[in-house]
Image (cartoon, rainbow, N blue to C red; front, side):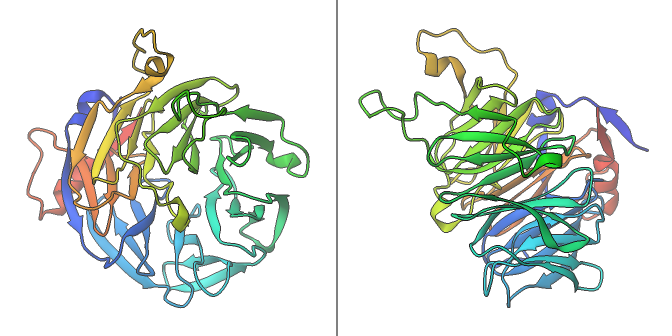
Length: 368
């Protein structure tokens, strides 16, 4: 029987590792849940795709992509189908059936490495961004892209808002901006441009504006009010989704510094309620930030918006490159070369880790 709960700090502090999976020989680079939260898919630098059943707590399938490589695995609106980016041979996007390991369609157009890939939350459209090239809008039903926005330099970060109507494109070079587009008018100018200003990225003796760490992803909160800007350095940003207010600087972790490898951005995640951010770290730690906790009074403006972790987990011995909170169930996963699933250990539930009932009892929780 499903139970509805409101996520709290106590829930996060009760998260425990439930199971480790060791299917990969190299770091996991991407992770995604299907919309029900029942299935999780990962990509790895060893050019493999792995599918997991989160309710049963079991590895379900291994698919190799040795010829093309694999990154940015994303579920479509069917848990049996994914899209992903190639890392070898060409920059084609691939639409794959996990059921029979057959390609459904190829999406050709990018000439540079794809570093951002996101499905629309409400339709068969999806968007992709390639470094030093541009952002393309697609539909699963057609191999031809629907629209293109030229990005001459830099790494575009993309995200859909929860309505699926707004597509955000984060462009760090040269202006540190997030441009918001109406996908119904994708060929027109953005209707809003947000400036992400961090006056504390470098000491005041440095020239202005301070140089921010390289952005690697942007993500809307589920309420659509906030945008998380993930960087390769020791700070992430939380901004208001529709004005230039910098809400938080998330600090206290060690940045992955992997942007030069065209990786990163997968180490942070919103919780479904939009109150907490969870993120990995180069030292293997997993950090939780409360972005709605009262800000402390300080004469130092930077300290006034700085948020340090309210809780940490220590399970990985290598950099935690992937962290994702389940969109529908009270669990999360993290990965370096192994994948760890975390659940709330609720008193009086079966806690035999070898029993699938352990996962079934704990994970059938729906967020309020």
